[in-house]
Length: 399
Length: 179
Image (cartoon, rainbow over all chains, first blue to last red; front, side, top):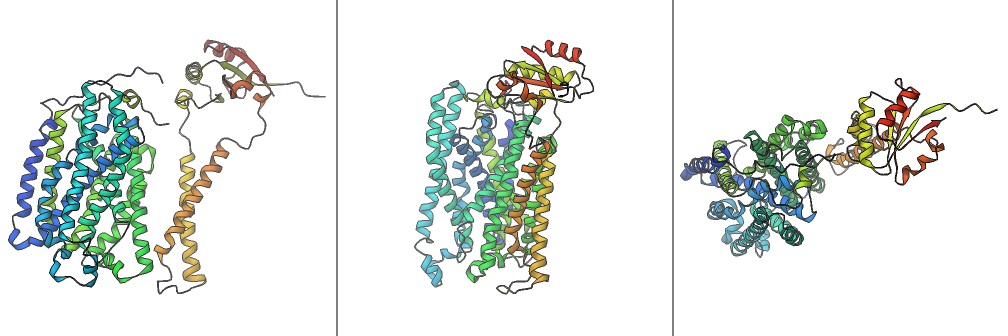
C-alpha cells in the first residue's frame, strides 16, 4: 500500500533488441512459408486454398481478438490494463494488412466455397443465393475490412497521440465515446465475417452460434498472444517493472474464463444439433466424425476445455511466472487446433493429410502477421505511457 | 451471583486505514496468532499486513464442484440406463451429451453451496454474540474507527507487554475487552 509509483523508463524498443528485428524475421519466415504453401499449386490447388484459409482465419482471429480487447477496455473504462493495452493495439494494427492477406482467399473462392458456382446450385443454395452470391460476398468483405481498418486506426492514433501529449484526458474521453458504437460494429462484422468465410464452406449447414464460437476462440488467441508477447518483452529486458504478476494474473483469468466460454458455446452449438438430429444441421458434425477427424472431434473437449480448465483454475498457476507462460502457449496451440478443425475437414482429405502445407501456410500468414506487428511495435512506446490511468495500472493489485 | 469478569482480550483503536495497516504489520511481526482487525470498510492489502495464510475456501469450492458434477452425472446414468431404462428419441440410454446441462448446473450449485457455507464455517457464523460488543468504543467500528483486538487466549498474550506493544503502534485508545 502507498508504495512510490515509478513510471517505467524501459518503454522504448532499443535497436539492439531482437524485438526490433521482429519485422525482418517475420517477413522472412512469412515469405518462405508462403512459397512453401503455394509451391505445389498445380497438384494440390484445393488443399492449398484450404490450408491458406486456415492460416488466414487463425491469425485474423488473434488480430480481431486484440481489437475487441482494446474496445472493451474503453467501454468498461478499465484502468488495470493500461500497461498491456499497447500490445493489443499493435496487434490490431495488422488488420489493415489483412486486406492483402485476403487476396488468396479471394482468388481461391471457387475452390473454397461451392456456393460460388452460381450455374450449378441445388434448390437450397438457390434459395440462399440472395445472400450467398459473389457480388454481395465481395461487398461484405469490403465492409468488414473498412470497419476493422477504421476502428483499428482510430483507437491506435488516439492512444499513440497520448504518448507525446502527456495524459490528455480528452483523447481518452473520445475513445470512451466511440467504444460503444465500436462494440456494435465489431460484433456484427466479426459474426458475419465468420459466417461468410468459415461457415459458408458448408453452405447447406447453418448455426446462429457460429459467430460467437469464432469470437470465443479469437479472445483465447488474443489473450494467449498478449501474454506471450509480454513475457517475451520482459525476457528481452524491457518493461521490467511495468508488467507485474498482477497483470499476468488477470490475463490468466481471461484465458481461463474464455476457455469456459468457448466450451459453453461449443457445447451449446453441438447439443442442439445432436438432440434435434435434423440432416441439414448434423452435416457439420457428421463430416467431422469421419476420415480421421473423429480423433480431433473427440479430443477437443478434453484438450481444449478440461485440461486448460483444471490447469488454469488455480490462482497459484496464474501467478506463477512459468505457469502462465505454459498456459498461454498451450491455449494458443489449442486455438490453432480448433481453427484447423473448423477449416481443414472441408478440404476433403483424411485428417492430417498434407499437413506440411497447413504448417507452411501458418508460418506464411503468421510470419506476415508478426512482421506487421513488429513493424508497428517499432514505431511507438511499448506501453501507453500517456494514459491518464497509467499509475493506477502500474499499482494494480488483485485482492 | 455473577462471576467476576475475565479479560477476554485487549482492544486498540486507530483513526485511519493507514494507521491500522502499519499497526497490523507490527502485531504480525511480534508473532501473535489469535488476533483480528476490525474496520468500517474493506482495507485493501490488510490480509498481507496481518500475515494471513491463503484461505482454504477455494479447495472447499473445488470439492463441492467435483461432488456436484460427479453426483449429477452418475445419478442420471443410473436412473436412465439401469434403474428405469426408457428409450428417448432413439438415443442411447446413457447419452452423456443430454446429461451435460444438469451436470453443469449441479456443479455450479454445489460449488456455490460449498462457497457460501464454507465461508460461514471459516467465519464461525452464525455468531450472535462477541465479547467486543460489550465495549462502548467498539460501536464506532461500523462508522469511522479502526480496531485491533488481541485475544487473551493467545500464547504470547501478557497484559502489560501486549498493552505496551499496542501503545507503540499508535493506538489512540486501549481498553480491556471483558468476557
